[in-house]
Figure 1: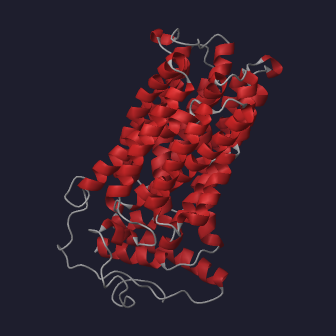
Figure 2 (figure 1 turned 60 degrees about the vertical axis):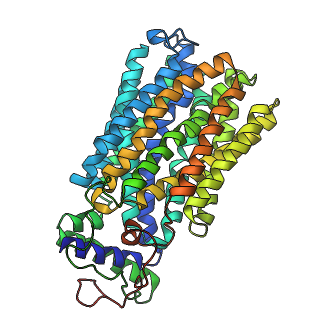
Figure 3 (figure 1 turned 45 degrees about the horizontal axis):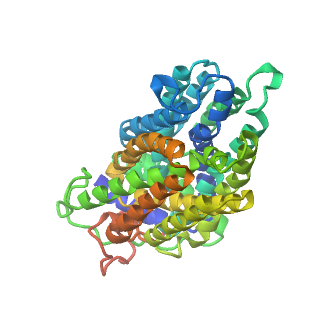
Length: 482
């Protein structure tokens, strides 16, 4: 009964128009995403300040005889791996909202602790713990948002969520440019940059009382009264805001008990190929995405810019982060999601080549903006896409599992990029990035299912839509008002 009722909940949400109530839910999740992005990308901007203080050392003279910036990236990716592989599983057990706010508290607390560290080892440990929370947050936002918005606006919802989340990038870049070369009130600037992210703990408390639990998750757990109350409240508000009756509820024909294959494992016959495809996708996406974003100031310095100028150029490029998903959002529900991912990955290859060959600051900034635009449009759509292709029962743990492989390659790429920069320069880094993006294009383009404007139940099915996708309005199910 809970699976059947969950199907009716999905159908009721999918028929809702995109009014202020729906967008408010998106905005609430986006606030949590802002602090997650701010925390995650500190590894990009902090190393110059840590080197300036003598905590980090340039080249291969850092902790354990390796690059300290590479080790910072490795600690970040190791924490993301643990958060995504293990902590995110709690979202399927105790709920999306609890993990969302709990993870936010974890990584802001670890960031505050990092402000008081004076050794590279202490910095790396705090980054590891903070990233455990950030990894769980990333997965939970993807699952949460997928289940809260109607099917015909999922692409736009993820674009808005990423656009607001990535506002953290210019904020972080500006704070780094202003503070890291300085010591306000006698305190190293990088400590102020890290401390600014600690306000997320207050935001977590505020969000906990305003976000509803996912009705999809509640219904699948058999908590039907709670799911009904949330959906009914959303329906009432949406109907009031739209000023007209809601459309009738339509759904796929309900399968007879026992006819549907088990959806409890990402390795069963239906989901195995998707799991393998997304493992490959994430493994190489991480190399391509973070190979540029994590090392941007360093790549700019390799082009001849000073530390101050490289941070300034990175600040200018960072404005592309919040703008790019909004631009992508105009296309997200019009162009099939998998092909938009393929196109933007190809853009990274083309513009990355231009960046590597550019010898002047204006060209480096231009190509940096274009790479960032493609990367962030690809990331927002990839997050939406991966959350769509698994069913509600396993969405949290399946997303965490496939994402985690990207964190393993992220650890390796942190040291690979450091070695390539030291021995071969920026062009070699972009050869690595381009090769990774070509594999991303092939994995999604050849093996990825279609998802645009399809219900979550339909996407979780075997493949193409069935002829009875648009069945008559539900009569026997608890479907709410028609």
